[in-house]
Every structure is written in C-alpha cells, then in structure tokens.
Amino acid sequence: MKNVILGLMLVFVTFTTQAQEKKNKNAKYEFEVNGNCEQCKKRIEKAAFSVSGVKSAEWHEDDHSLHLIINEEKCSELDVKKAVAKAGYDTAEVKAEKAAYDNLPGCCQYDRK
Image (cartoon, rainbow, N blue to C red):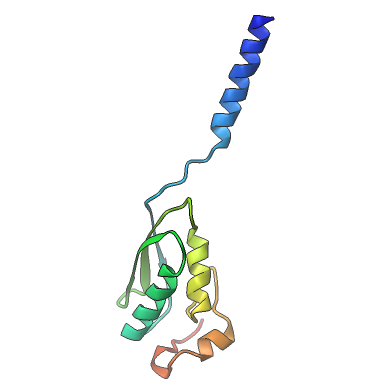
C-alpha cells in the first residue's frame, strides 16, 4: 500500500511540475511596426509602455522595428501589438482601426498594405 501511495504522489508531482509553464521576466521581442517619423517613434513607444509589464521599448525609424523587453508574467507580445494598433500603427498580426489611423497627423500616415 505504501508503494502505491508513493507511486501516486510521484506521478502527481511529475504532472504538476510539467503543467507549470515558466514565464520569462526579461523576454526580448522584435517586430515590425509601420511608421514614418520621430512623432511616430514617440507614439509607438508610449503605446508600448502603456502595457503593464513592458520594461523597454525602442522603435527604430530606419527599419520600422520595435525592440521590446517584457515580463511575460504580466503581458504578452500580442498585448503590446494591440496597444500599438490602438494608437494607429499596423503590425503584421494586428492592424489599426481606420479611425485610429485617420487620427494620426499627416506626416505619420504611412502607406498601408
């Protein structure tokens, strides 16, 4: 009987350990965000920082890439993409609504794909 209980406990501990997915507190991501200028940079980075868990956000105008460091226990890459889209900027996965895009200043309205 002791062996059966010990065996069941071992199986339980094994499944419990496997079920817990480790989240990275300093996960690095990079993805494309459409934009044109320094004003875009400020808006994109502000939108990224509005998401709880974003530690670092830097948008590069030359290659239109947003470099992130996030705490995956608090947010995901998709959360940041949604916030950026809400500010009017498209990513590959999440497109900004037309109204948000139309609210951007003229110099920030990029060619939408």
